[in-house]
Length: 365
Image 1 (cartoon, rainbow, N blue to C red):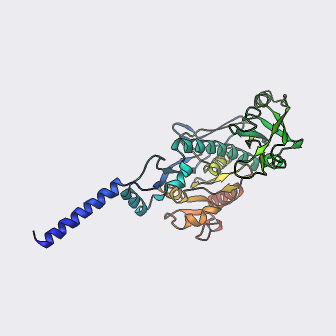
Image 2: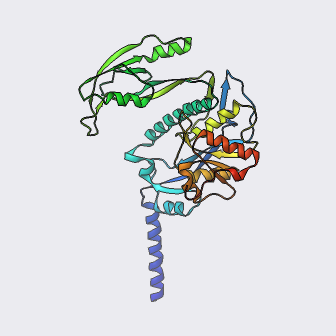
Image 3: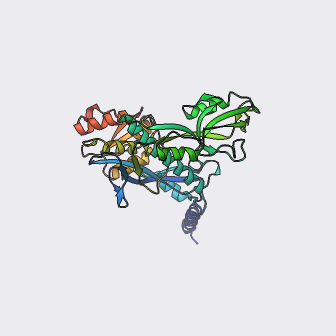
């Protein structure tokens, strides 16, 4: 057989072998790509995303779209060919598998965590919007979770309202840990609580909660090697009572990143006029009870998804600006925001046509 033919045959066989290896050999990466975007002012699956009753609402036009990211499942192992294709594609991003599923987290665990974060983001969005409108919201510190096997198990329960620790009033969740860690492991901490069922009854009757009691819990040392740090095995959170009903109807979405857009949608429906002036605005960002906007993951995928749907402006958390500005889709203006107030100011400029006044994202932030 001629040498040239042998060489070509060997090269072909080598190429086939490499392609087979690329298809068959899994690599430790996962893919992120643009997910659905949903207008918080509109409908999803045939019903309004934001449903408000017990308070006057106003028509709203334009778009205030929340954005999402699709990710490959925890159990899916992409091959080398898929990874290379993803690296070359403009509308996807390849990241280490552990970035999305750290410490061997399963897809079910990740979904549960995302669902909890999504629920909390909705609550914070409601609080932030109503605070911006100077509508009072009642808030209190609660037991968010109880660690199995901890000193608090069976003594405190999720939803219990924490009024005080060792007689010192608790005003925010961080106060609980500060007061508990004043003890040495093995010492007692005294919690003044209102059981969850009594708090629920009080909310229903619009009266002060009864059933306040004191619970003494023996602290123990933290499991993270902090032998001098006392814990009881709970995490504290915040619960609220709203003066009217605000329901957010959106299924199959997780994580905290829609908080800002939910808050703006609520604000728009509770105020006359249009926040967007009919313009297509999208965005992302976590939000806390005070209206502070925080960074999110997958910003590059969200801007691509928003522009593909027709967005002209994208409200971007300040800490995501540099990453987003490195590859901004054509025709999309990235607007930097740090608070819900910043977002409302930017929307005023957008509907007034004063684009030059907008705080735009740059490669430096």
